[in-house]
Image (cartoon, rainbow, N blue to C red; front, side, top):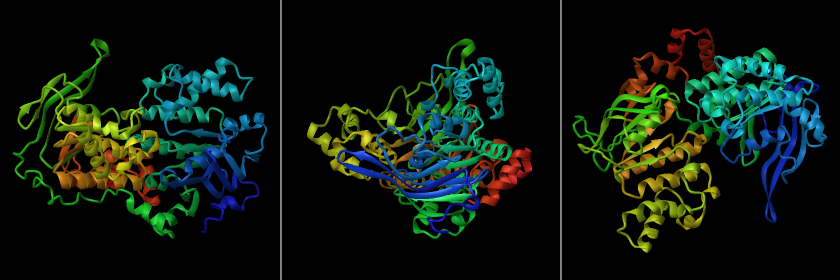
Length: 565
């Protein structure tokens, strides 16, 4: 199937639900215009699902936004036609466009925190949307509708939780609330832009199962935008691959994933972390690698515990966890959101003080922050000062030593930028001028500045597309080989952890439920929770994805274990 052909059987219908022909979107930048989307065409019928995939900057989110006319009034220049539910999105009057957004098509955005009002209860926000698109509905009826859709998307005790505010929901529950808001007016088309990014595998599986069930029940069409090919494989029938604003390949999802015709698609597939990929030998480590006897311990946590809050509101985030890390070793820590992974990581570098237990570095108890222990944070946008250049951010740890001149600090910071694959001439540029992967490289350079022996990486690739993710992981592996670094890799992507870790600790509700060599834990998991995590990992085979979804729907533990291999 060529990129010019429409997607799937919807092309054969007289009036498809979504009909995009020759869509081009340009954004003005000074005297020039950047073309984000270049001549995209596709059709979608009722009940069908189309996946749009590609790297960051490929234009996939721009296409999604154009389906609801979100570029109108922004200065963006659109050509071509976009028709949704028979409405021409580009020329429709404002009143008709407003009706389209909600009652005909609805959108689920990537970041629920930025999409939800932090001051309003979740139920009130959904009720407001419902009343906006159904003016005759009373407040009581709108509130009832809000509770109904919250219950439909699996929010427990929906009537009570509808009075909660966004910060009182977990990441997965916030994403469910956004889906409930989109469903409030029973749209015919749902546009989901990266709806599972940064969610752990079990919550991700629940969200994808929910979207599948809603399609089956309501017959709505689905446009799923994602950089995760595994997510798309089990969720759509048709797939469109984008690069630099253009469609490079399109066809049935099984065909594209198993017999890709374009080299770019093959490159994307090659970059996807796979569960069967084992940890590469690290014989070239400068330190000689982790001690085979286990006696050479660099960092040790002994029964560490961390509590938050007081008295009745007290929450135990980490409950008596003991772990060790040897020189040059990578310890992977996996688990669902709220399992205590990040809290443990912060205690290991003493950014958080344990409520109980001790942390030892080279046999001595740590009583404060140590320059040999550094951290790379999950979100480089929030961890980098937007008012300081990237060079200044990398130079700050060097300046804190008080032993280097300004010239030496600048030279060293430029060397660190080059070491992580960034042009040292970008020293004076600011974080907003970089992509997500480039900002993560800045965070790694800053962590390297003090010359650490161990770095805790907290979800360093969770929000990156597969090719950028592979580049960052390759960078960490190269730095580990060259400098003999020990790493603690915190991630919810089990495939990433397997290929990058010597040992794995699985956390649940603040405790380690299973720990051991990566291959042992992945090939012969002992704890039921570990087995459930492995069964929830997305796969590239659509047939296997359907098998796993059926197993989850039936609550069949044996089938889940079989699906996990």
